[in-house]
Image (cartoon, rainbow, N blue to C red; front, side, top):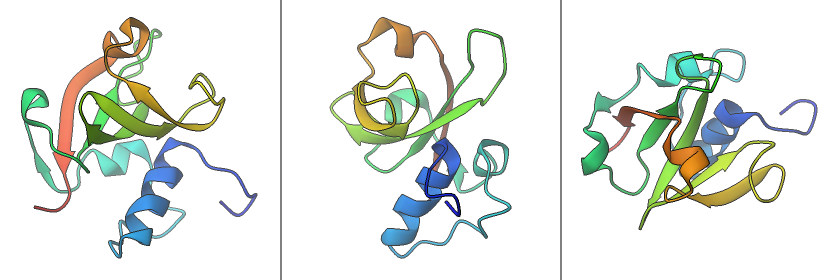
Length: 109
């Protein structure tokens, strides 16, 4: 953010911060710290605002994080999103669905 750009975890931190929820300082928030926050939720029980994680094609677990919006849509920042950055993507897109790893965290109730 200091360089006026996001990665997926700093984008999640920014969004939660705008909602008044602090996830930690800028230097400490990563996908690996986000995956330990809140409480675990089953993938099929996601609600709007839940964080969920991806394992990329290289096998890197929790390599990406997104915010679930409901109706099979999610908000994230990724170079392969439709916008080339921050965007809304469908979980029905096979390329994204196959990389979800089932890890979901609910930060707030």
